[in-house]
Length: 149
Length: 149
DNA sequence: AGAAACTGTATCGGTAGCGATTACGTAATA
DNA sequence: TATTACGTAATCGCTACCGATACAGTTTCT
Figure (cartoon, rainbow over the protein chains, first blue to last red):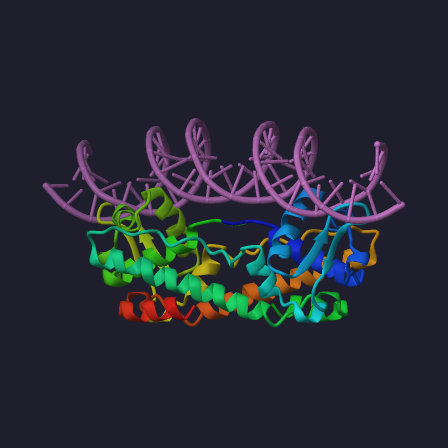
């Protein structure tokens, strides 16, 4: 894994729910509407909302007027939680196994693995500073982040 | 992108060169030897060493007794430099475009993009604290990082 | 000079993963 | 009961990567 788009789609969906003020079952938003905003296929949306539901971030109900809604305030949902909910990680590849015979060749993979894990943890830590509510904030903020990076 | 293994392979190759003390052309290591340590195909190794060469991290020479060697002390090569050299990034997906009509649907993608860039920058910053020399250090260090993450 | 070793690159085949789509069973509403 | 909508499985087409082969150019060794 993974060039997966699950995390961006999840973040977008949650931000959309927050914008729609879908905080209770009677304000549920259907997957078709979310899919139209991303844009993507409704099934793709339901695949990620199902994961978000298992993580306790959103509720969902079938049937007419059904759909998904947030179970927490948008400001209380940080993006690292979202990332974990969709089983994502900062992907830099997987450390190759190395050869068993060579002592150094066998030791390097563990060190590389440790570096990859450290990088992933750093990315998650950064995401923990961003909430779904932040995604709806003034675009000037987003621009500032974009330029400083 | 990408699920590419370029970064792990590059890190492994550089660590191997450092271990072999390949600091000058007369101590060059052939791609076949590097490939045997990873393990992978010699061509895969040459693909990444070519990029590392263009980034000024290693030198390479064709011909008998040819191969690759480090152009800098291993302690001066940080892993974020390696990551950039192979055009890698902490991959969390790409922000979907959103729909043009909806004002919020159009704003969210920029915010998501900014978050992805921030996470990538954080991962790179963490990698900048790790050098190739660190990859050869006591495995207890690597274990400590692995467990703390 | 000739043989041998090695890089850099192009190319091809196999494979794996993903998104989009269709389909179906279940659940909730009108 | 008819309709709406979720959750999940199965399938399709696409893309990207790795591994392997091949080849031209370069350097060393005999």
